[in-house]
Image (cartoon, rainbow, N blue to C red; front, top):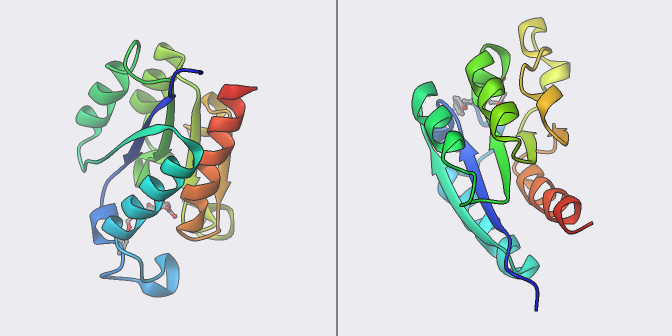
Length: 148
Ligand code: CA2
């Protein structure tokens, strides 16, 4: 019996607003709905998940820094820090944790400042534009990568 994989699922700034504002961009599901979806997928895949959200860059960096020995992989929607945070990128690169970046909206089809991700180059891959279903695919893609 293989050991359960432990996956940290991080959501960045303002994602606590999901389902309450801008449904034309982000849909109607709340962050709690996303967390339920991720937990359901985790049960099906037989992995452990810990879902957290923070508006604070330093807190996200701290959580990533604590992953060695505690988590095997990371699913992250860095929110607007995607486009600004070298600190988050360095945290992922520094811990060498296999990570998948997820976005609800298609960042490449939006304003130009959203086209650049500082995070994607240190991730296994990026899923963008499939709504909250992207979290399901990010988790299953990461688990498949970790088990390969
Ligand atoms: O599409 C995504 O998942 C984003 O990461 C969402 C970020 C945005 O800055 C990225 O460019 C793309 C914004 C998260 C804030 O979410 C809100 C939800 C409802 C109402 C207002 C903001």
